[in-house]
Amino acid sequence: MTIKNTSVLVILSAILIVCFFMNISLGSVSIPVSHVISAVFGTSDHESWQYIIVDYRLPKAITAILVGSGLGISGLMMQTLFRNPLAGPFVLGISSGASLGVALVILGSGLFGGVFAGVLISKWSIVIAASLGSFLVLLAVLLISAKVRDTMAILIIGLMFGSITAAIVSVLSYFSSAEQLQQYIFWGFGSLGNLSWDELWIFFGIYALGLLFAIASLKALDTFLLGENYAKSLGLNIKQSRLIIILATSLLAGSITAFAGPIAFIGLAIPHLTRQLFDTSSHRILLPAVFLIGAIVMLICDSIAQLPTSDYMLPINAITSLIGAPVVVWLLVKQRKMIF
Image 1 (spheres, one colour):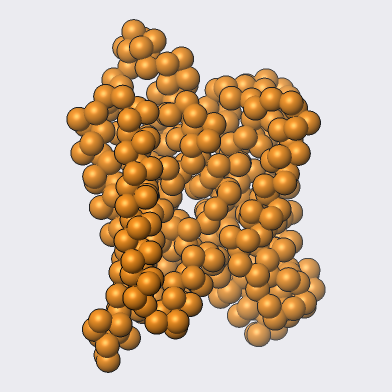
Image 2 (cartoon, rainbow, N blue to C red):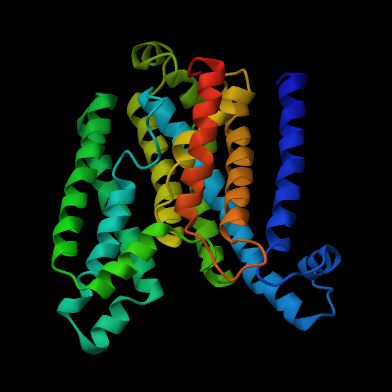
């Protein structure tokens, strides 16, 4: 690793710490920075401020870090695996599978009515439905990837899964009530502030497992950049490496969609932003860089979404697209080429 890349990583780490404390300092209730820091370390003498920081803002900020870094890493792996700059973490239909699971619970709950409807649309049932939807699509993709050798064919099959699930969701939406549609649309906006500490630990456990698989794939990712035929000549087990990469992406993107909803832009754009800063194709540098930049961007987007000193909260999906997409377009126009 060069001195320049090391220096940029150190600077990004410092920016992440600043963004983290900025995020938990902002909100509808104004809290002095000194009390924010003391609340984080459990030494605040102001009970209500301690509660706001520890039980609401801190879990939300940590969720933002996990979501931003996880989607960024998933996007990096998918773009490398498919050698396609437009590939993102959801190209395999993972998000569509989660959306279908949630649609079946929310939009299909009207069929059961009464007590069952209340149970079906509880918070945990939505998380479980999204996880099951992602898992079933993942299972189908893994089975197909064991049969199909061409990586591009897997990409197209993933996109077809997305089209099929979108069509089923459209049919369910057509027969649903206005209230059910509204609830489903709100889930689609994405949210970082709905997790308790217990839920956050479960989310973190799945995220950590996906991250371990991603780290284990670093050498394979570098080799995939040379093309599958050249990778084979170097002795890389293509099928096994591809399965591990798909599994890592699915664990990261699937858990994020289940706990925070389908969040757009981050997975596609963060790897491109990272490549603009780091003049390297080594995933040993790109992966930690994507982790840091994804977390920073997500913390900034969440800080803007929560409208400081206001009780209103904008949809995080809208902010990530409105803020991030023009930045990516500007960077690409400035560089006059897409570094890949």
